[in-house]
Amino acid sequence: MELIKSIVEMQKISNDLRYNGLKIALVPTMGYFHEGHLSLMRYAREKAHKVITSLYVNPTQFAQNEDFSKYPRDINRDFRLADETGIDYLFLPSNEEMYPPEFNTFINIKGISEKFEGKSRPTHFNGVATIVAKLFNITHPHIAIFGQKDYQQTLVIKQLVKDLNFDIEIIVLPTFREHDGLAMSSRNVYLSEDLRTKATIIFETLTKAKDLIIAGEKNAHKIIEFMRNNLERVRELRIDYAVAVCAENLEEKPDFESNDKVALLIAAYLGSTRLIDNMLVNVP
Ligand code: PAF
Image (tube, rainbow, N blue to C red):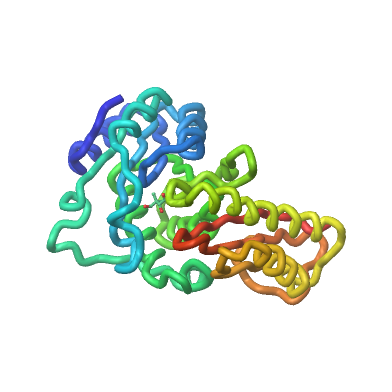
């Protein structure tokens, strides 16, 4: 595996790969790899001739009061894991490389990026869309692979690709979970042992809400009420949002209909750690 730190060098490599007719897969990450990241890389390995993983903790997607400076980092471990997974290039740019002092362009996607995560973290998706567009222009992938855990992010990126005509296929893979259902996330390391155990209430709530829909409940208010009540059983948990919306565009609807695809979305604080998770359900 080659470690690339310079944008110009990465662009030259990806241009040469394309010139030679090779298919490139990009797996964008912020590092501190867990099985979720590695499963995206393994999938990429199967689908393309060359796999580029980017590792960059993007400052512009964190607000002032968020965890940018304490976001977990372990470059040596990440390098080893990416290498063992058989990826070809690890792109590891510096902040100076990505955002030089004269940097002045931000992508603002309306609609889909304004609700839920966008409401709680108003500048978050501008940062995500901007960095993802930069990564696309630096690595020139044919396919880019993301995890479903950040479900709204995947919709924002699809909108970006559509609106700005990136000729890139976006692939979304199911969330990787711990043995007890907790969605894998680099942020799980922030949880104390006690809160780590209690965090399973999120997956439990999603699973039970899914069962409720499959058993015939179509009323969004009742599904949401169930989700909130179940989450509130954990005293240390503070709900940011818990919703049942249309999976395609995150639109709210009073009643779902047969064949609708519903996204159950949860964001909640356990102590000071903010966790998100989701589940998709086809209404019978
Ligand atoms: O999902 C993430 O890890 C980040 O938001 C991404 C897509 C790598 C952009 O920084």
